[in-house]
Length: 397
Ligand code: NAD
Ligand code: MG
Image (spheres, rainbow, N blue to C red):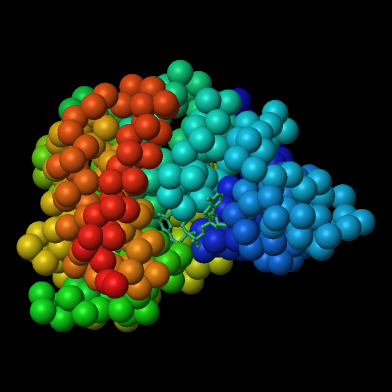
């Protein structure tokens, strides 16, 4: 069915880095997109500014006190302020919304993202943690509702663009040999083992190419981000883990590739600007201006590739292990990582201890099924409480 314009969008995580890029692209196409709902966790003042600019029907604050503050700030405005996790799900599944940008960071995004999927919305998926936690359950819900799922992660969006348009998650049938996920290598690509022991949150968040939220910035520094992306690619594209390879590509120009059995490798190139995958997903299968500059090939001196160093970046191995083990393991990996990264950002845990906490949590978790949302959430809760204990034992006084 052809889309009717303007399309109404709910942006989950509107005050974040992806939220800002999404609103930037949308504001360039007022005839195509209008904002139905915006959500945030605690930043009432920032959400108020966005509401005044975009006049959504609803604004949701996950936090109750922040919702009170937002109501005060928006007195006399047409936007209705809601609060709490249930309201996040309601604006994700509301009949008026045509599409949902899932850009909450971490496990907090799982329920509202699944609500959008189940309601059959067009879902723009940035919140990779939701898919990592609930893999099979999530993809079963996509299949059951027939929703259109468009990846926002630049690598997965690049793969999406390099696949046949009618791709049905059957890689062999389409002659796909491998997926090559590129990685910048993060701020510590060339940092020695010894030096990694003493790196600070400020250094970890200073990404050489991308400007992102703090959690994903630390994930990029440990390379857990690439690990989560391997798991994400497995679920999105139905490709076996041993057919997903990671290539370090410091220039960040090739965003990922698909290797076909005839020897052809298709890639998507572009400047490192998240507005490109966002515009692609918003308009798919059309193309619209994103605001990103044209790629200047003559200014790129070289494109280089390297194998990842699994010893210095054990989080990448842990993610492959969790994916290989299956069941609840990816959910436990994600939960332990979220706790360890939060502790590192607070100065309670050393950078190299992040991987230790995750490894211990995976060992403790044991294998369990992840067929239901309750089972996934139970794993998430148990892994977090174990990881917190490990952080206390291994952390800084
Ligand atoms: P961010 O920290 O900048 O923003 C996170 C958003 O989520 C904010 O709006 C915040 O209010 C909201 N949020 C946080 N905790 C919440 C909670 N408990 N309940 C409800 N809302 C909550 O993060 P980001 O960098 O924009 O990343 C968002 C997601 O997109 C992540 O899953 C990340 O991995 C993914 N992603 C980001 C980028 C990027 O360039 N930033 C690239 C690829 C994928
Ligand atoms: Mg990415």
